[in-house]
Image (cartoon, rainbow, N blue to C red):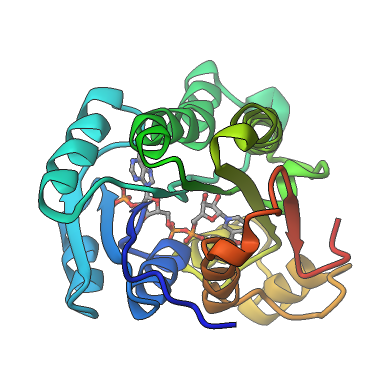
Length: 254
Ligand SMILES: NC(=O)c1ccc[n+]([C@@H]2O[C@H](COP(=O)([O-])OP(=O)(O)OC[C@H]3O[C@@H](n4cnc5c(N)ncnc54)[C@H](OP(=O)(O)O)[C@@H]3O)[C@@H](O)[C@H]2O)c1
């Protein structure tokens, strides 16, 4: 299948690092104009320097007004956004009894309300175009439970629910809505998780990695480029019939 997204403008939240950066590059290589957002300038600049099609703007996904301003300013330069990748996320682990209300709220704000804000900003331009692709980077934690990440699991289950509901609502408008649900993926977020396990348990990095990979069907961490390839496929015209899917990666993990 030819992946030609030349007439498209995609916005990727959390596009400066990890999965978001890989998605931005893959969409740019497929010909799309790509706008990446995040809170820190330095990683955004670095990813934008990797391809001429990538531009960047600072925006916090929990601030709907800030995000909306980027959707409209980038549309003025590069056409309306018809591909929205809600990728920004944070993960913290804590036994439920020690999880504070503030940590709970912050996790829900970024991982769930951030997706709500991104998709709401994208709705109007997609309706105007009569075509759209909304993709959330959820997690396997959106499909099954896991100890010590109750807030993250709740937020990611919420993302999957939002995706399924919106898919039903927007199918008649030519807009598809899908969620990708990866297991542990080789990114800065995984590095922080490994550091945390090593610090709390005294395990070596190899032992911590083996503990995380226990039960994985492949025995390997997902690579950001694998997620990015799937995103590009979901953005093609040929992927039009696929909507409301919550796609586990690797297959069989949930
Ligand atoms: N790595 C894994 O094992 C794994 C597994 C399953 C799912 N995921 C999901 O994959 C997505 C990407 O994570 P990653 O692994 O690539 O980790 P990462 O490298 O830490 O990327 C997260 C990105 O989100 C951005 N971000 C965080 N809070 C934000 C906010 N309030 N507003 C805007 N941007 C914000 C960060 O940039 P700034 O800090 O500059 O804002 C960063 O670029 C997340 O949704 C994560 O939950 C990851």
